[in-house]
Amino acid sequence: MSPTPSHSASRLLILITAGFGLALGAQAASHDDEHASGAHGAASSQEEPKVIAKDSLKQKMAAGKAAAKAEKSDPKAEPTSVSMAELRDLIDQKIAEVRAKQAAAPAVKVVNKSPKPRAVAMSGQVKQSMAAYGAAAVPGLPAGHDLHWEYTGTAGPQSWGQLKPEFKTCSSGTRQSPIDIRDGIKVQLEPIQFDYRPTPFRVIDNGHTVQVNLDPGNNITVSGRRYELVQFHFHRPSEERINGRQYDMVAHLVHKDAQGRLAVVAVLLDQGKEHPMVQLVWNSLPLEKEIEQASPVMLDMNLMLPEQRQYYTYMGSLTTPPCTEGVLWLVLKQPATLSPYQLSVFSRLYANNARPVQSASGRMIKEGQ
Image 1 (spheres, rainbow, N blue to C red):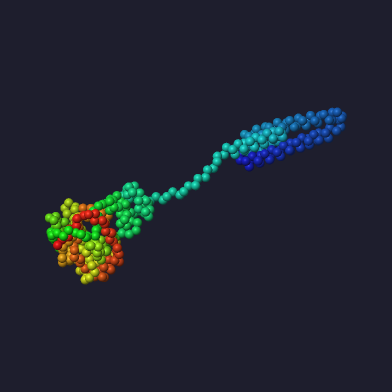
Image 2 (cartoon, rainbow, N blue to C red):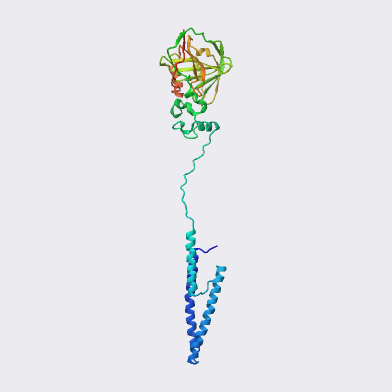
């Protein structure tokens, strides 16, 4: 291991001190020899001491060289005296070594590293969505956002089609619901055959609405096709408009046939008398979201329907993501009623959970007589 610059400086100081000591020692030895030979003749007393001093200096210089060699092999060895010429050579050699080391020292490069972004765990579905549309597809949504659709804000109806690939129809579809029902063709429509009976039911607040799930056994038949009632839920205000008019609420009764095709009966709701069936649903509201609460009583869906059952019909879509099209809509013309208090109960949970009306896009609308 090479000595450090501070160590080298210490060694040079010792060598310099030793050099000066050597010169002084030589002078002192010559002076002592002259006094020791004072009784001899003048000629012999001047030459003989010089020879002795010269021989002594040669011996010390030889010893200094040997010590320097020994010091190189053993850095811990004590320094010895050397000549001034050798001392200068050593000093020049050490200075050259230090300069060579300083020149060879690598430059230090300072790199300003930004902190690595924190990894966000995402589900495979979210990763697929982000890859397809990019985090910037919906302004205001950060990377790794849950991409949960809402009725307001950055994940509201205007962005549904961009949140996930399976929601694409919400923005690209041509037969979307709801619509403002107007200018319908007045015809004699086949009556909807309701086959409803008392059924066990369960209530859940799914984060978007209050939904009622029913056991099998309730059906409708329309245009010769039979559909089974699966669930119904509420929107405030009504999503459908009739000639521009919007109602206080609407109940959507969702039916499905054996092939998976959907038919939705829409029951418009206005303030008025208390609705007995709506009250049964409110009685069974769960205390927490996403918890399904079973009711101890049966539910008769016939109580949900108004007395007059003429309807409008058109082909549309689901009004919530994924906005699937090919849905048969049956909108009852006569609204049912619910009390102001019943309306306020739902308003506490969802003040507005209605999708804006969509373009009719020249679709045929039929109005029953």
